[in-house]
Length: 120
Image 1 (spheres, one colour):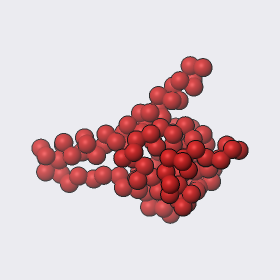
Image 2 (tube, rainbow, N blue to C red; image 1 turned 30 degrees about the vertical axis):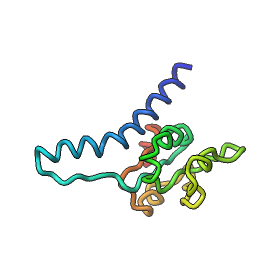
Image 3 (tube, rainbow, N blue to C red; image 1 turned 180 degrees about the vertical axis):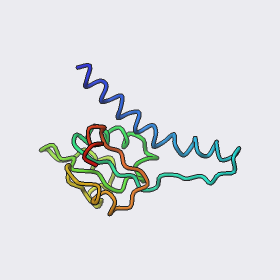
Image 4 (spheres, rainbow, N blue to C red; image 1 turned 90 degrees about the vertical axis):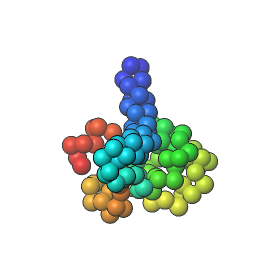
């Protein structure tokens, strides 16, 4: 149970970083004159991506940035179809897709579980 709670906290932190990164960069650019870089193309991938996707899609401002989500169907369809009307039009990556598949979509940000780090 404790492990499951940590997974949800990690997913929430990842979603928050998608939202907080542009704000933090905008604040820092006012003092350093650096250009503001905002992730426009976000990919959610890997195994158990449903948990991460649910958290990211909870933020309406982040939904438009998501260009692809790995397989989210758990046998009964995907709830994300209800939240994002264009969800079915987005390319779906295989849960075990390699780095080449992610790179082909030209993302600005890829969010995966830490267990995928070694394979990517």
